Amino acid sequence: MTIHVDIVSAEGQMFSGQGEMIYAPAAMGEIGIAPRHAPLVTQLKPGEVRVDPGDGKPHEHFYVSGGMIEVQPFKVTILADTGIRAADLDEAAAQEAKRRAEDALANRSADMDLAKAQVELSEAMAQLRAIERLRKTR
Amino acid sequence: MAGAKEIRTKIASVKSTQKITSAMEMVAASKMRKAQDRMEATRPYAEKMRQVIGHVALANPEYKHPFMHAREVKRVGYIIVSSDRGLCGGLNSNLFRRLLRDIQELDAAGIEVEYCTIGTKALGFFRRVGGKVAAQATHLGDAPHIDDLVGTVKVMLDAYDNGEIDEIRIAYNEFVNTMTQRPTVAQLVPLAEGEDAAELKHHWDYIYEPGAKEVLDGLLTRYVESLVYQAVVENSACEQSARMVAMKSATDNAGDVIKELQLIYNKARQAAITQEISEIVSGAAAVAS
Image (tube, rainbow over all chains, first blue to last red; front, side, top):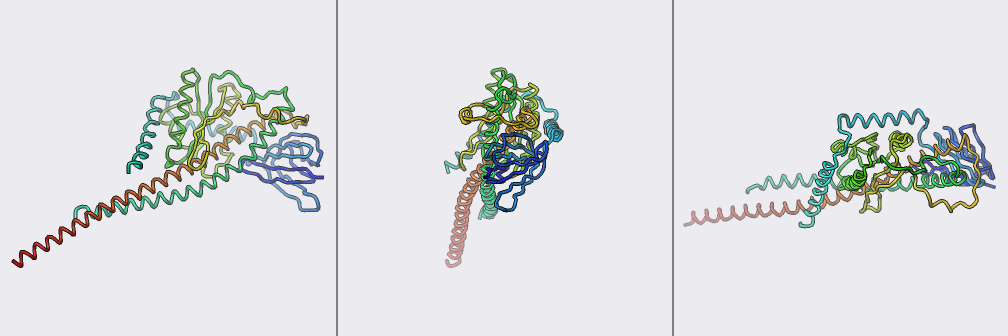
């Protein structure tokens, strides 16, 4: 008896196939999942995911830097992160993004000048149209 | 032989420009294929995530996450995905125009707006016209990494959590095909619900570790991030194909210009030769007589 395993990250599929046993680093300790496991959703810590395909074949190893795992009786879905996540790291990244915006837009008015934006965009569009016309008349 | 040399120099310079544009066209074509592959690669994650969120939401109807709960809209946050580089036709201008129409509508309804920009073109636009930019990310490169977006997305999600904004929308170019890119504005948060309601007939009661709230929090944050990432990847495929088309027409234009210049040059050369012959002939006639 086997269980279907999908390991995906935001940047692509890492694994899809059958396994007899899956080992994953859950937030509250490593878990082993056999077919007919109770439905479970939990977070993963950075660590190694192993899939035992059975029949004495070698185990498949994957490194995940965290993520989520969903277990249904015959299906396991691992949503892997591509980088290390932690509340304080995320917070630092958010602060950094804010700071970048402040630096880039220092002493700019916070009110958008809609008229000015319109003028600018119509200029850009006029240029493009002029190029189009030039091509047609030639 | 008036200007023949100038025309020759001009032809040489247009030719070297043409070489550059045709090289850029080929580079864009190969990058576009890679970007399209990347676009395909992001689909399974978002799909799986949607399934898992659907399951959890169904198994757990009593807990409603704020991201799934619509409220009265007083402020809207926009995440604007643009390219880092130019020379891609009207890609960015078209997107900004689409966005501006939206903003004008909100403005008329008295709803405030703030932005979060991705890519230098959007940042440059707001630097010129003003507007409240809460966060920004630039120089993601041809292979954008989701980790580079975490901070920017978090700023917006935090603002939503704190009630500073009541809706998050994303503006990006949708990849229809190589020739067509469609400027799109879509709602990110609150998540549009529906569709999956009938999909699951027998639902499980999950075991949550550590708890339903934490699990759903983690899932939804990642889901929104993956949607933004998808938009970024899709926009980059659009950028490459728009650049490919723009550079192709620039190369064709350069070819036309060279043809015309060549004609003018030949005429000028012919005129000079004719003049020279007639001078020789009349000179010889003068000597003979």
